[in-house]
Length: 626
Ligand SMILES: *[C@@H]1O[C@H](CO)[C@@H](O)[C@H](O)[C@H]1NC(C)=O
Ligand SMILES: *[C@@H]1O[C@H](CO)[C@@H](O)[C@H](O)[C@H]1NC(C)=O
Ligand SMILES: *[C@@H]1O[C@H](CO)[C@@H](O)[C@H](O)[C@H]1NC(C)=O
Ligand SMILES: *[C@@H]1O[C@H](CO)[C@@H](O)[C@H](O)[C@H]1NC(C)=O
Ligand SMILES: *[C@@H]1O[C@H](CO)[C@@H](O)[C@H](O)[C@H]1NC(C)=O
Ligand SMILES: *[C@@H]1O[C@H](CO)[C@@H](O)[C@H](O)[C@H]1NC(C)=O
Ligand SMILES: *[C@@H]1O[C@H](CO)[C@@H](O)[C@H](O)[C@H]1NC(C)=O
Ligand SMILES: *[C@@H]1O[C@H](CO)[C@@H](O)[C@H](O)[C@H]1NC(C)=O
Ligand SMILES: *[C@@H]1O[C@H](CO)[C@@H](O)[C@H](O)[C@H]1NC(C)=O
Ligand SMILES: *[C@@H]1O[C@H](CO)[C@@H](O)[C@H](O)[C@H]1NC(C)=O
Ligand SMILES: *[C@@H]1O[C@H](CO)[C@@H](O)[C@H](O)[C@H]1NC(C)=O
View (cartoon, rainbow, N blue to C red):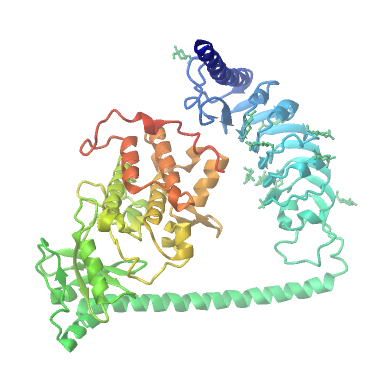
């Protein structure tokens, strides 16, 4: 009897396994049928004999490697119509990107077999003919981009059945007829510009900017007289514009005058802000240079013997506070917690002096915190050499790193003597910083928090590994960076709410630093326009919607054979910046994960043969964000 059971189980198991691999074999064949029947000018490594998952360019499988869930082939030079009964056989497909190719012909009707399809990118092709009439079967569609083709016919009203639809781009086609009432609350983006649409824009779409309907012959019956000159579409005969001609002129004049005044006010404001800023900075450095700064006064006034520069044990510096104040100082940077100066003493010793602004704790707590910080001795943690506390002045003294911070190396001016960081350098920075932060987290019974991890607080040690500075200040300082500053780009979501940094929020900030190293972009930056881009959100959107490769720093593209490592690092960074703090990895685990990506140095490594567990599917995990 038992033998029979066992036999049955083996049968069932075998069936399941066979079923799984059979699906994949069938998926693979479908792709081969697709590519063998469509001319393409760039070569694909789609070899029949090689495994399809984690190997074929542009193909992503699901977690257990049983089905193909994403096909991304942008700009492969595909030419001709999509062969029938090929792509449509990939019934588990969720993401299809064939954008920027030369595909022509109709959108295949058999695409409706792709019931799970959620992201469809076909923009910049030569598709023609009508859109499918019945979109209802594609109820998973979330983002649809069919822009820049030659689609004609009308926009099907069945689009209103797509309850998950978030973005629809049909711009630059030849669509005609009236715009259907797409009453979709989840719809966040639509662009119908440059078609031949007519009639009245339905109420449900009036919440979108007028520009998305530009280049059509449509009217806005329910819109009040011209809102502003920049948004009023010039090509549209607006039925209400005749009646309100005079009003329009008056409004226009008003708007012009108002904008002039606004420009002047803004200009004056900027001049004032800039001047006062420069003045105050000059004053700071001059005072620190000439010694007329408050610490000395404080010392002489109170004659308190305890108000002296406190050096940590083992520190071989010989200067005292007077020397420090006499040293020539140069502003290095204005941080979240104060201004840093480079001070060169008379004996040519160079140190970094950090002047803290508002400290929220008393002398005892401050000293206690400094003791903890000063006790951490690690090759990847910048050593606090000395500190000073008086009623109106708090100073911290660090070694000076002459290569500057990782932020300045990464984002500094691209001059002739600035060599881009290569991949090895970036990996060494990442590993070093991870080790340093892990060491910091082990302090105070595994409870110590860095609180201010960002690339401008990471330097290169003598071995060119990352070395972390500026730790332990968040708990004794009251400052929080303003919401649109570079520093704010490192802040975990929960810190914005609670204003309390914890170890998981350090992990988040470290993840942002990793993304910075991978993308070469600042955590908060502006694009060509004035749009503010948050690095984490941007990476999420690129990874979700398009090809992962587009995330990486162009300067890294010149180094061969690093894609896999970059993808692994990207995965690690993405696990650090997940929203829920308790889902982020712990620093010691992160150190292991990063060391597994590349065995750069052999010391401290258990063995070099354990790479495999970290090199599991590079693209599946980041294939689609929930
Ligand atoms: C496919 O791979 C096999 C070995 O893995 C190789 O012999 C063959 O030449 C490859 N075919 C193509 C078309 O690249
Ligand atoms: C579609 O997606 C769902 C959820 O991810 C999954 O359970 C289902 O098996 C998929 N369908 C196919 C045909 O793969
Ligand atoms: C698109 O198709 C038209 C007409 O068939 C052709 O003239 C044009 O060159 C095609 N464009 C591209 C980019 O293939
Ligand atoms: C697609 O929609 C079906 C039905 O609504 C759902 O069961 C399935 O999970 C969806 N698939 C995906 C990948 O979201
Ligand atoms: C559209 O397709 C859905 C699902 O396949 C079906 O239920 C519905 O009847 C179709 N509607 C029309 C008008 O063909
Ligand atoms: C669709 O494609 C156009 C052109 O490439 C692009 O500008 C736009 O951002 C895309 N829209 C969506 C919703 O992806
Ligand atoms: C889809 O939309 C069409 C037209 O709006 C409608 O006739 C049809 O009943 C809808 N189908 C489903 C399944 O909701
Ligand atoms: C439409 O095409 C024009 C030029 O051909 C281009 O500048 C514009 O960005 C396109 N619009 C969209 C939404 O892709
Ligand atoms: C519309 O298409 C024409 C021709 O492709 C292009 O020159 C124009 O810039 C487009 N307009 C918009 C608003 O995209
Ligand atoms: C829609 O496309 C036009 C060009 O075709 C572009 O100027 C406009 O910014 C786009 N609007 C949105 C919301 O994407
Ligand atoms: C725009 O549509 C109106 C009617 O809605 C029509 O009288 C007019 O000729 C159209 N203009 C163009 C340029 O097609």
